[in-house]
Length: 155
Image 1 (tube, rainbow, N blue to C red):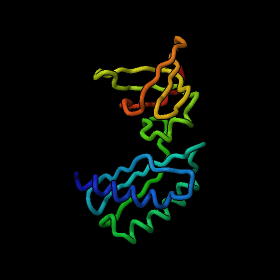
Image 2 (image 1 turned 45 degrees about the horizontal axis):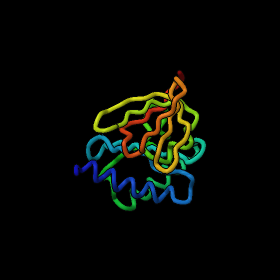
Image 3 (image 1 turned 30 degrees about the horizontal axis):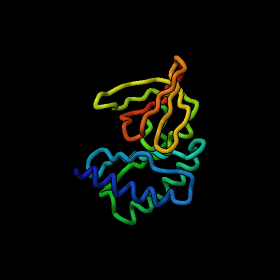
Image 4 (image 1 turned 90 degrees about the vertical axis):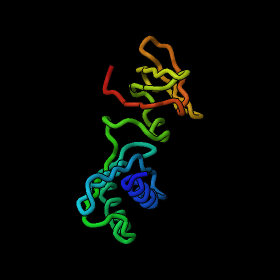
């Protein structure tokens, strides 16, 4: 484990503490740069709907206080709280239900081979993603086999 991995884990822990009791969760944490001039990106998402700017600002304030109180980051740093946006893949199973009805590209492993499908997310339940392909057929993919899922803008 690298220094940045350990730092990301510590930041994630505190971010999850700040989000407790809110319908929000941490998607990803990325600390970049060198000691004394780090930039920290925390991507958050909601179970339903989106994440607004006011929420990001409040979370940033609360998390900054915790990071400073626990001396997590040496020196100065810049903290950015953001929703993942369409360009970032879905990385948490909690992101799938709110994306039902949207077009997605899914890379997954099936019997050791990497495969790719595009289609509309029909359901996500019991750890399985159901995608309706352009020809109308459906494919079921176990969440554990998904390598990457990206939401696409249109057909």
